[in-house]
Image 1 (tube, helix red, strand yellow):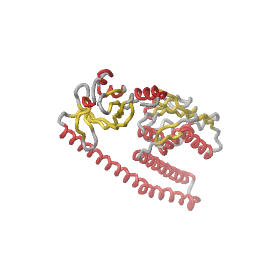
Image 2: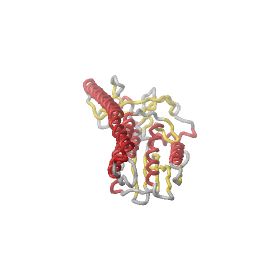
Image 3: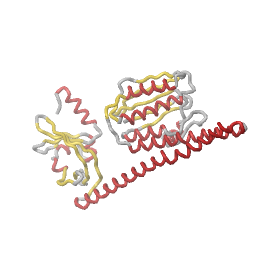
Image 4: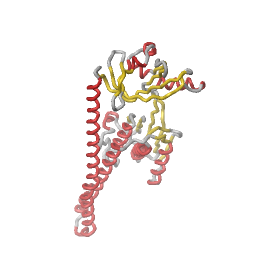
Length: 351
């Protein structure tokens, strides 16, 4: 199956993988290896499963969309997509079968059930495409139709201040100044909503990404944009992930930018980026010693436009963490935060 010195490593990876998979001999169709994830899916013990042949697991016939009908120990059928890879197993020609997508129980009468399933899948795709088209139309409308009146409000308010400022008292000038500030904030909110929309519909292009290098570049950019601040960065080297490069850059921009913002009132500001191993997966984190937050409100952290600090304390629209949450979910990962008021915060995520 693998070179002798790597056999134990590959066997461990096979057994611990969360993706269900099994191995069968090509000629005899005998099942010769199975991992725990597959045993849980089919409902057998290891000994029971390895006493079977492929013919007792895979029922004849597949759908036009490539679905196969497989049988569980309790005699229920389910649909599954598979990927097969040829390999050598103990000197015999074998196949590694990976189970990709599955759909719950189907009837023993396959034709009608499969046709109905494919019809439902087609309807779902149609609705999804329509929703994406509506989202694109909305984004275009926000980008163009809403910006124009905001520019007019901001422009005419500034013109009033410039051309008629000597005829206005201080209170009138303050009112116009507040109008300008409000339109600029609205413009920023529009930009943030568009950013969220782009994240939602962007296609994932997974590659090997050096997250440490990305974090270092972002840190340098923030220091360059605000050279007066003295912030110490501790960025662990060699952290990588198989992820979309553009979206992971945006993810780290939001998390590191969040840490930069909430350490703004500290002279000894410290921001860290690192990783730990937990339950068989890499958990990345961004930690700071800034304002922190009350864990009683942790459930609001990743909601759109939710803020745990007053606007006069820290600027922002309450969109950055929502975008970060959406990016992590697009990658099938998790994100959560821990903190306490005045003692900093740590945001963890997986990809």
